[in-house]
Image 1: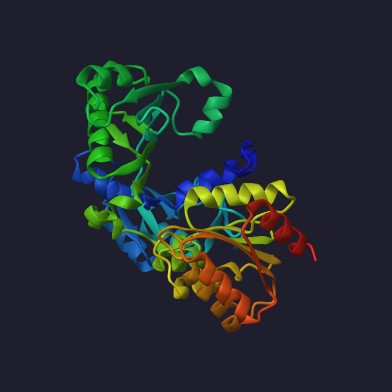
Image 2: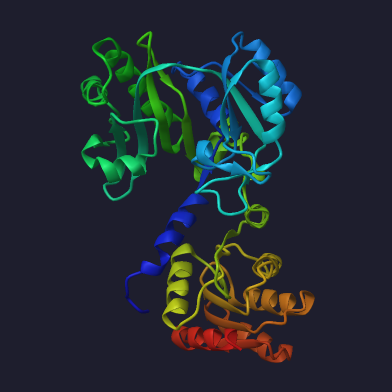
Length: 416
C-alpha cells in the first residue's frame, strides 16, 4: 500500500464525517433547548403560508423574524431559486408572515454552503425578535485528536466564526473538556466572563453553558453551535440561533431526536443507500468506487488519484453485503452520468468474495452496464469468486489481485 499524504481527500474527509451524524432544523434545536430550560426566543414552525399566519398571531407580537428552515449555513445572505433574496427576514405581523412564507416554502434556498442547487425549504420558523445588548459565539465539538470534547467561545458573535478567525483570531478561545468530567462551575464562569457579557449576565451565561454541555452529553451530540448566544437588554441569556448534530450510532437510544430527521434535505440517492446499509457520497470524478470498509475506501480513492484518475463517489458496502446490496451499490454508482469505469476493491473478511462476484455478475447483466468494471478481490472464497467471474463470459469484468495494477487499469479504461 502506498503511504502518501491524502491531500486530495481533505474535503472528502469532511463529507464522510457528515454522513456519520444527524443534523436537525433550527426549530427542532429550539425545542430541545426549551426541554432543558435554556433560554431561546418564543417561536413556532409553520409548513404552509396559512400556518405561518396563525403562528404569527399566536406569538402575540408584531415584531417578528421569519427564518427559512433549510440545513445550510449563511441563510441570511442566501437567495432562492426564484430570485427572492435572503432566508431571514424581519417582519411586522401575521400578514407579512404569510406573504414571506409564500416566497420561501417549497423553494430552494441557495447559499455559499448549499451547493448550486440549494436546499429545499420544508418549513419556516417564526420567532419573536430579540434586541441584543451583546452577541457572542459558543460551540461544543468533538476533539478526536485529544479524545475529549472542545468548547469554543468568542466575544464576537452574530457573524461567521470563520470571518472572526480571519480578522481577529485572538477573539476565539478554546477549552478542552473531558466528556465524563464535564464543565465545572469555575470553568463555566471563566468561559462566560471572556465572552463579553455584562456582570449582570455572566452567571446566567455560565448556567447556560453548563446546560448546553449536559445536552451535548445526554443526547449524544457531535456538535452544538449557538450563534449568537445573546445577552438581551433585560440581561437575560438566550440562544437566538442554534445548530445541533448527533451521532448516528446513537440513533437507537435517541429516538425522539432521530424522529426529527428531514430526508428532504439529503441527496435522494444517499438516503436510498442508507436504507440498504451502504455509506454512499457523490463526488465529481469519473471512476466509480465500490469498497468494503471506510479506511480501505479512502485508500482506494487515493490510489486512483495517484494513477491519474478522479473518484466519482465514496461507497462503503460494509461487512454484511449480499449480492442484492452489491447490485444496489452498482445502481447508485451509475446514477452519476460522469462514471466511465468502476473500481471494485474488496478485502473479503466478513463479506465473502463469491458474494461480491455474484453481485458483480448480476449487476452487469441486470443493469446492462456499458462501462468496464475492474475488480480487485482478496480474502474469503477468492478462488470461487475468480471461477464465477471467469465462467460468466462477461468481457466488461476485469479481475486483478494487485491493487496498483487494478488502479492503473481502471484509470486507463476510464479514459477511453
